[in-house]
Image: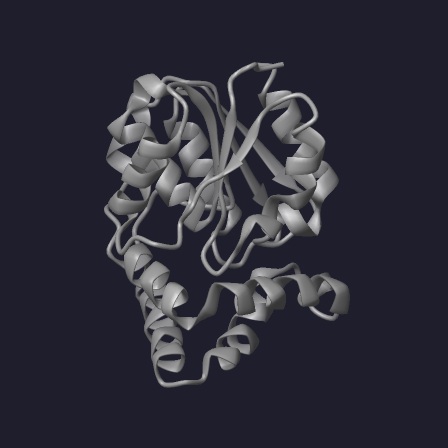
Length: 232
């Protein structure tokens, strides 16, 4: 088991609750830190804050937007990242459809209809068989409410302006876990397959019956994958 601290970066519109199960389980043996991704206007800014706050060396994991931040961190300071976990994320830029969805949700949030954003996104965030899971939706909606419209807009604009991380994947040398839900509609499995193929020391895990919010939807599977990763 790794002895260095573990820094986890939540996804867009998510809080530390995204990793509650993992923090509780892995925190028994590894110091677990949730990065602040709420105050900066760019992915680079979030990465700079993380590096300023983090220990000299650390394991790093991020989900979705958190994965973009993780890729930026390892690009800027590879010597500080001992191992990398990329959960339900991508290295490629937005498609036109992604950009359109971001634009629509930004307008809703800026014009006082932030709760509509949850209703617009909920069906894309989880596996088809969890869309009527009221307990899971309550957790996701609580994160949405805690994030608030200003932070949400800031995160969306940061994600929209992020660079293409694909050219740098082959330079990643640390042990890397690439994990994705088999029903992820936001960052479909082929995106993780492409990343895992490009990163020299990557291992791909596809979680069955799981959508985009894997750490909430299938917490035991994600915790097990991260626990194994910490032994590499």
